[in-house]
Structures are given as C-alpha cells and as structure tokens.
Image (cartoon, rainbow, N blue to C red; front, side, top):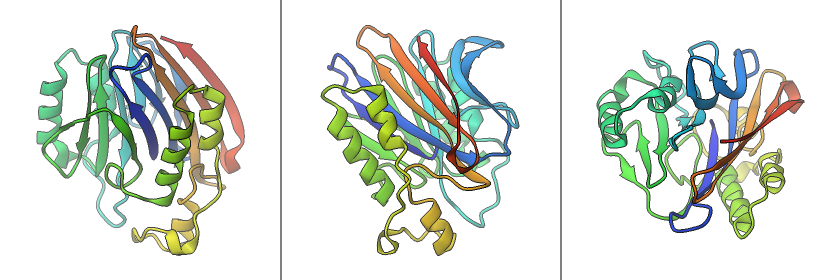
Length: 248
C-alpha cells in the first residue's frame, strides 16, 4: 500500500475502520482479494512476482498492512516487503514475538511501515526503528514516510475519514480514495524524485500510463469479530477492473 488511513477505537462497536490505496506499476502481476488456496485462513490480494501481499485478514481475527518508504537511490532490500504481511497472516506465533523477530530482521528489507493487529490490539513498526509501537485509540495515517507524516494527501484523507466515522459507509470511503486532485506545488514534500513525479504521487488516487493506484480497499471490523473487506481494482489511467466484496 502507499496510503492507509484508519481509526482505531477498541471500545467502539466498530473498533477498526480503514481505507487504503495500493500504488504499483500496472505491469507487476497481481491477484485480487481472495481466500488463499495454500493458506485458507488468509483473505488478501497477492503479488505474483514475489508471493507476498500488502493488506489482508485471517479467519481468526488477524490483520496486517504495509506501505513502502520512498527512498530514491537506495538499493532494494534483499527480501520482498510483501512477505512481512504474508508471514504474519500465515504464522501461528504471537504478535509480540513476530514484531520482535521482524524488527531484528528489518535491514533485510527496503524501508517499510507495518501494521499488525488482532481483536485486542494494533501495533505499528517502522523499518528504521527497532521498537514496535502499540497504538492507542485514535485516527492515524501512513503513506510513504513515517506514521502521520503530514503530507498533503495523507492529511486530506485523514480529514475525509474523520468526517465519515459516525456512520462509515463503504461507498463514501471509496469516494475519497478516488480523489485524484494533486497537491499544490508549494505543498509538495521533497523526497528526491523531482517535481513532476512529486506532483503525480501527491494525489490520494494516482493514475498514469504505467504506475498508479492498483487497488482501493475498505476494511470495517466489528466488535463481534466479523469483518467487511472490499477491494476495487484498477488498471492504467485509473480504469476500473473489478470489485471483490467479502464478509469474513
């Protein structure tokens, strides 16, 4: 993923409300959201190039999601970051053990932000920080920097999510995930990719011939443990490809 905004409110009837966009090259082969044949407890999309995923849930209540950190010029990691999500979803180890192990091995991956959770707690791990953080109740967002780094697209998406929290409706969440308006030049972050690319990447929804938002995902978690997971997939120039709607 390249943009995730979420409300974590453990005592609420809907403890987790999340909206996320996965940005990637259109040519990278991908399977849409589905139950995995080789790990039937997992519901997620799948990167066919490296075998991992960017966001998913399990039948027993686990959740994980990932964004990359924008680091132009830095060599890629030895391992695919998508396996960080897949390993948690397919693992039986405790969340604390998994986070300790992942923090110790973080240098094997390119920069990342990792969210992992279950029915009781939600944790955040930044690839450059060996200390996982247990998140308190609140409204959060992460893009291709750190948690809550105030990039324009992230702040816009957080405000939009905040406006929907009284009665989150999937269509309303998808509406703001589809916002393709770029930020003003004066608001752009400087991440070393040049002005034109900063502009392209500054919108919540990215569309171009070769790279853009491949999937928009809404996740609604209820206090009884049930989850509503919806994914819309897109091709070049943001052309709509399909939708998967799962009750888990």
